Amino acid sequence: MQFGIFSVGDVTTDPTTGTTPTEHERLKAMLTIAQKTEEVGLDVFATGEHHNEPFVVSSPTTLLGYVAARTEKLILSTATTLITTNDPVKIAEDFALLQHIADGRVDLMMGRGNTGPVYPWFGKDIRQGVNLAFENYALLHRLWHEDVVDWSGKFRTPLQGFTATPRPLDGVAPFVWHGSIRTPEIAEQAAYYGDGFFANNIFWPRSHFARLIQLYRERYEHYGHGTADQAYVGLGGQVFMRKNSQDAVKEFRPYFDNAPVYGHGPSLEDFTDQTPLTVGSPQQVIDKTLTFRETFGDYQRQLFLMDHAGLPLKTVLEQLDILGEEVVPVLRREFAALKPAHVPDGPTHAARVAAKAADQQPALV
Amino acid sequence: MNTRHLAVVTAGLGQPSSTRLLADRLTQATVRRLAEDGITAEVTVVELRDHAHAITDNLLTGFAAPELAAAIDAVTAADGLIAVTPIFTTSYSGLFKSFVDVLDPTALTGQPVLLAATGGTPRHSLALDYAVRPLFSYLRARPLSTTVFAASEDWGSTASELPGRIERAAGELAAEMTRAGRTVKDPWALGDSFEDLLKGV
Image 1 (cartoon, rainbow over the protein chains, first blue to last red):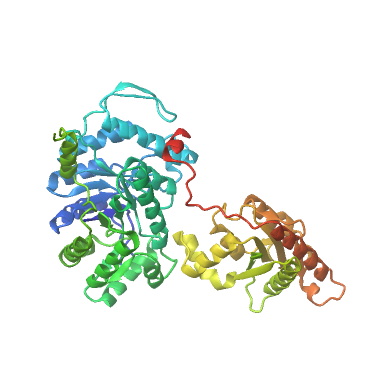
Image 2 (tube, rainbow over the protein chains, first blue to last red):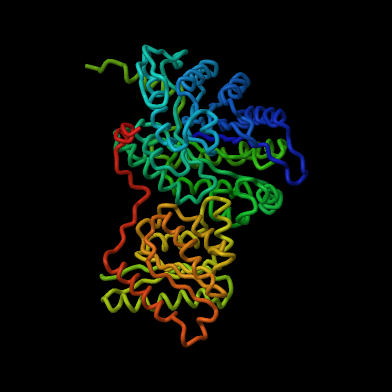
């Protein structure tokens, strides 16, 4: 099981102090948080991509390139990369290049984006959102798996004898997760390619994500990549912890009440009850996170949303300390003890290179 | 096994409310007409007042709290719907529209709907046809031709057309519901393989 954090890169006023970080401060804070993720023993740092305020990360590979140089083991991922409005050729090249710089520690999470206006800014039509996700990924997949590509499609100029540069490191493309909040077709797409499926699992009830993941697992088996329980599932989650749960609730409440995504809506208590959000002691986080396995089956990656809603950097770093020292070691042990042997571990570049080499061994006579 | 599911949505704000009173009259008449055709009605009444906070929360977060989710499921899966709103400032009430806004826009497709409203004076009665009917037409529901409007004076007048109109509308809804049970589309069902979806690009 891989553990990590995912950031949306929002610039939000701290409701307890009224201070708002500048874009520069927020980006520098994200770099600090990413490095801290490795220091406290987590496996993955992932960042979203946005092209509108109040979000600051428009170019994830630039940010992750810096993090790659400052870390040694951390897997770098996006959460998500916009497969609809980015040119698939540029995605193929950017992430292959990042892979070389990071010695293979690169994943990619695909998403369609969450704001309508982004489409026309990049010359696309939102009504074609799902079709753009299908066609663009079909091209991206070929650019990574075939050295020379001839291509013609509906959304992009044709390619003749094109080779995306550089080629993926060791001939193994970055592992791809398909992120979806509500679209069954995206779960189907992930299953078709034998890629991973990531459910952000933070804003909606688990019953909703359970249906999406079940669909993905069934179709993963249908397309012959393995059994349903061998499919690659990633989950989000969000937590806020203090030693005493009352302190956690008291400290987090103003951030929750004013957060752009759910503030001024349900109470913290209702939201905690209805969604995977956990605000409380490290033990409460451990207990609730372990229930994810009961709902969704054995899964490969758990990412937590930690730096959002205006929480100051100092607080986020404290949260990462608690996560790394008190929560994740227990979760690692518990999840590992429960996982059957035939269920794969979280994907790594080294393991995928080894698997590829094994595939190419001549059969023993 | 001859049963039909009837959902009733009522958006009155007071308790007791004349909107709920009208909804109950329509429900009773419809259940009786169905019974005459040998059909047992399973009725779910959704009093929007009870879900007012949850509806606002749903607008802000994008998901329904459990009780509201159950109400939405009952409404969208029903074979027929009775929708009753007070008329505020020439149109359906904001709470009524907010409830409609948290439904999936395709969830009422093909559903027979009896439209009804309450208001202070008969002058508001046309709101059913210029405001409420287009809303349900947009949703591809099947609003019945007879609508029922009850003004304050209808409740006290022996000369009121209200009882006759309730009977006529209930008869139309029962007839629609008798004809066939409604098939609800499963949003999780994928008809095509991914190869077919790709070809469709």
